[in-house]
Amino acid sequence: MTWNSEDLDLDAYLARIGYEGEPAPDLETLRALQRAHVAAIPFENLEVALGHQVPLDLKSLQAKLVGRRRGGYCYEQNSLFAAVLERIGFTVAGRGARVRANGAALRPVTHAVLAVTVEDRLWLADTGFGAQGITEPMPLQDGAQVEQGGWSYGIRVESEGIHVLTTLGAEGWSDLYAFSPQTLYPADFMVMNHYSSSHPQSRFVGQVVAQRPGREVRTALVRDGLTLSRPDGTVERRSVPVDELIAVLAGTFDIELDAAEAAALVRVHSAGE
Image 1 (cartoon, rainbow, N blue to C red):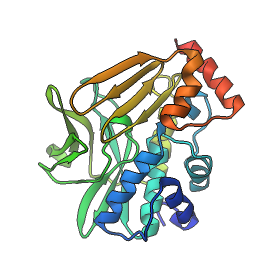
Image 2: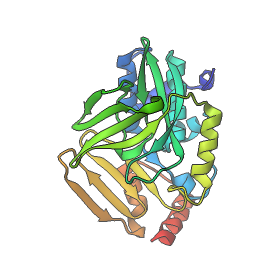
Image 3: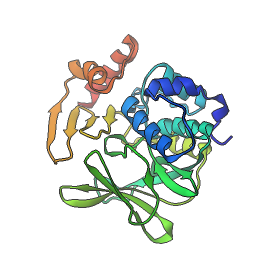
């Protein structure tokens, strides 16, 4: 199987995200799984910030995201989610996306997403885009628009079949990321992961990032800045000093670290201030 789902402990994963019932390869299950996944498993780059390797084999992903109840970033989140969907019976293909949010600069293809086939129709599934990410799958068709807990998203198709995920904000529609219909595989995610986890120009290297999408509030910690955004346009910002970092990660993002990890992360956080 493409995503090695035969090695997945599905029951442990479903318990981790609080999913009840018998999953089936249908749209209702896909929606419920993505909602539960993003609510339970935070987006975070702490292994990268600490200078550690980020393995993407299924055994390591299960041990970290399920067993240790940690989070991860897009390659980890969507690799695990792909294995779950494949195990249930969905047809799942990887895609590589170019992030367009927060500026017009042309960026490399560094974001991993999933295209899931349900009853001969393609859906975008993404559990790893952080605070601005979708919380449910979206139909991959030009002009599609959905509202998810007060946040509006759309799909636009450009030349060469490029799909663009957009979102509606106070200043109108803006692009989040764009991806081609080319199928990517776990080996491709590994290459992208190497850049994002080690290249000095990667935004994940050398700083703490922890985020959570939400239907009522989006929460994002980047370096020492904590931001809470709501659908009505209100935004709260505050600084997180070094002595509050571990408590914020635990209390706001449900990320529990052991003493050695916490001490090392505080050193990284201090150096970045």
